[in-house]
Length: 430
Image 1 (tube, helix red, strand yellow):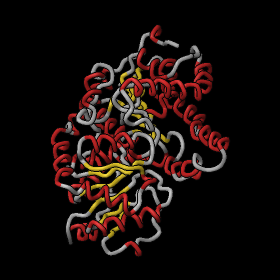
Image 2: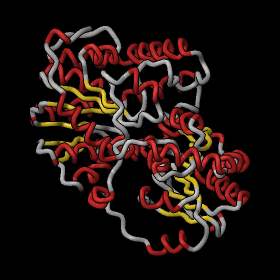
Image 3: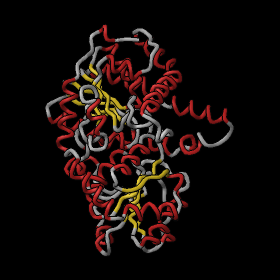
Image 4: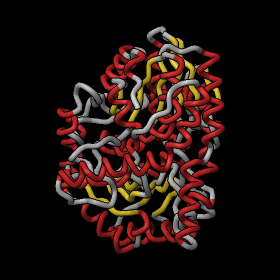
């Protein structure tokens, strides 16, 4: 089987696809990865055929448009910024993915949430199977609320998802129908999620049923939850080899287990203020801090105190078990790694699905959650004191014991990709 895996976004979007692609290649399939140019090394490192796809996502995440576009200026200025964000890179990704599909002639095209609107018309036009890879619930359901309506009744939650689908469709229908006309297929007049469902698209939910037991039941036949697609130590060594840092190991071992703090690929609006708050909160609770800078620039940690160690990227699977708690942005992969290690968690969400994971951490009694914009020394101290209780440690341990193993999750996801088949022509609906 020939498989093209086209995924845009940050490392948290791309890495699970690389894990899945590596397993599919190991089964004998011809896999071509199309990923952002700044993350090509992840897929090439494990030996997959890889092409750059779209824009440099690190540069984009650190751009003024992303960091400040939606929070500055008049209402009209913010509306223009939202439109610019929504359409950023669209023409480039259309051209490049079309070229990859036409060159490779795949049997199956796998894509992520941000590029489904390009992939679906291509799959229809070329008569190939389509697979979606989701890292959190992004389809209408009564259990996981749309951000901003926490605590609403189930009927309201379901309605909010429907409204969101129609708002997004109204904002993007013109660009999709322009693409469809260029491909010689009919234009459409309804939101994408419903069309994908009617086409019987395989929609892999690459997260664990322990976090969403109701969805695991409701979606079992259409959107199966496989478990998190976590990278194995062997694959990580090939994907993104990190030079050993004996001084870091010595620092971790030379004292009580530290609190890990990191925000991954997420831009922090005021890094200096956040770092100062982290250092202050940790001092108040009497803990050391291992601070991972991620995609944020850290000028100097000299003023933070002797209890803070700043480092570059680390192997979560190797470091988290040596920490007493983890504080992070709430990306699906980092949430999974922290709880896989049985460590209480504080989610400081920035955007996207991160508030959802924060809510699940709280609901499962594994720690605390807040918005990253609300971080102060006082708020983080309160969250850390909650996360460092025996109750939170017991909750994290219980979740770790219940999670699907990474090997089983990858096996399930690969089986689902292998089951994907082109939809009949009459399944293409408006």
